[in-house]
Length: 152
Image (cartoon, rainbow, N blue to C red):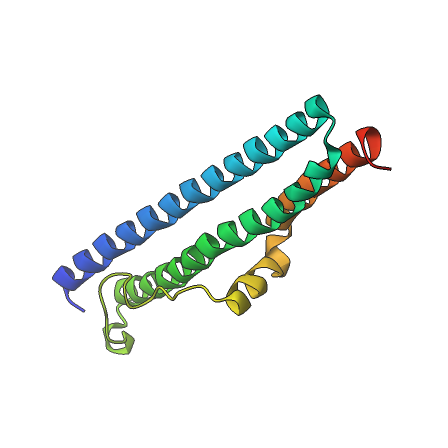
């Protein structure tokens, strides 16, 4: 890897980091939609005294959860790419140029379409408990509203 290839690797690294930041923005937008949608349904059900509508929130919570984790799967593929680029750059900077593997530019060959299996696996990763906790709290709030105002 020569200096020109190193510059390309740095450029690639920065573009992958921008992609990861964009995925974070999408995920935060999804979470904003979750809060707005579930709050709207809760408000509607209380004002209209139609508490059975609150059960629709559970379906929405699951749908938004899968939507968020679909984007999270793309983001995790990009994380793997950054680790690879960092490893290549580090090897170059350490002077170990012979052990650098073939370099492919971009993300297109790295990103894989999220499958149900991949999404579920991502949801239940041990280091992602804080993400799932958000949806659990929304469901708990919804259940609390059902218990306080509604059906039971």
